[in-house]
Amino acid sequence: MSDKVLTVEFVTPEKRVWSGKATMVSARTLEGDLGILPDHAPLLGVLVDGKVTIESVDGSSQEFNVSGGFLSVANNRVSVLGESATQ
Image 1: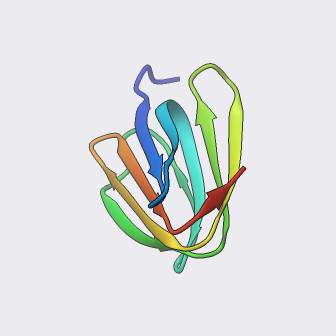
Image 2: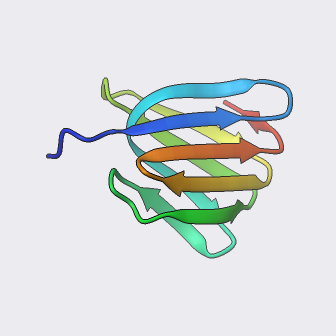
């Protein structure tokens, strides 16, 4: 396995939902379900209502219900901008 990781920021207008290092992020966009791993190609996607799952570097998994928003991927950085999110 690569020693590269993703730097993830997940925010809503009200709060920072999750921030840290991760090995994978999965989310549902208008184009379908995505799995983001280190060195993923740059991407901008529109989130649909569904789950965002973050696999952190310590092996734990965080799952959030998100209502709309955007997902941006570039240079091993993932930004999730949700309209609202609950755990």
